[in-house]
Picture 1: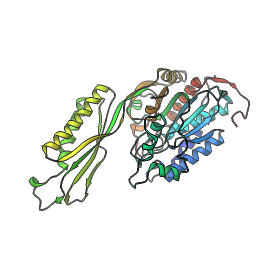
Picture 2: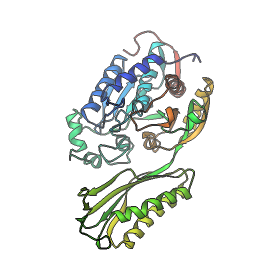
Picture 3: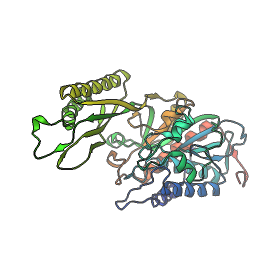
Picture 4: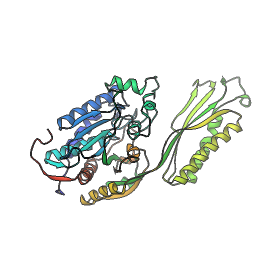
Length: 421
């Protein structure tokens, strides 16, 4: 296989910018939440591009989209790549979509050079990865991997009460079709880092060896609504007192497990939500992460204990419960080696690292050999409309993906035109 083989960086960048217009926000980002009209439009655009590239397109009952490039022996297990197209409400142009479009670009580059592979190559577009509309991050890949029952995923609802099943049906997905997992030889996901490490260390490629442990917890505190003026402070049953106690203690618990611990309070909601009423109910979320299993469990235990102690101290009813968890992942040594070899062959500066964010590869790794590739994003900024990356880094990552896929899918000699028509 010629080491000079490269993707068409201009085509990849152009398509990233085209996709960014689907659900474009006023501040330069994207809002394509899962199974909204915008997400459906983005999937349709991608499908048109894939069909023009000779791919077979199919959708499974949970809405995962697969783009299939035939192998010379199409009965062999596929080599898979891809990511997701859905975004946060104020998301950027690259999170998820880069891995999808780079996978399609790898296929098109093979087509351009008339290079066949023995194993078929598939790009997977996983449904509801972000988990911001329907409350289950990495939902589609979890169902595909057998880690989430299909009916449980169907029953998830958004804030308007619309279910995953009903929205899939609105998108013309056959939710009654059998759920079948294709055979997969290996899976490689390409993604922006979503953190600052590669940029700070002036490295182009992150060779991702695993993903840290992570979970989300919901805290509910029941108080009593009261008028903000006449009610003395000492007579209030104010749930915010629990938050006031817990927040600094949580930050302290994370600091005690520095530098790798992560603690985020991302949602704080009060009812009735009036400025001159003592809240009758408080809900807030806690996101906890750590690459070390022992430290992660210790952090989770500490958070639970802090909440329970604050509830008791203020004589308020409430609870803390874990609503989602993704155990840490160690990626397949063979897949990591393929990425490492591709980066070295392309003479790109690289480093090995553990992902701080969850990705669909966490679910895939439970059932198929998997690994990931990272490229830098400016300032480490992601889940933000200002998220951006350098075109040269975007192209470099796609080249590492291309060569990793070629190595895993077993290249053959250049073929005659029309082999994938």
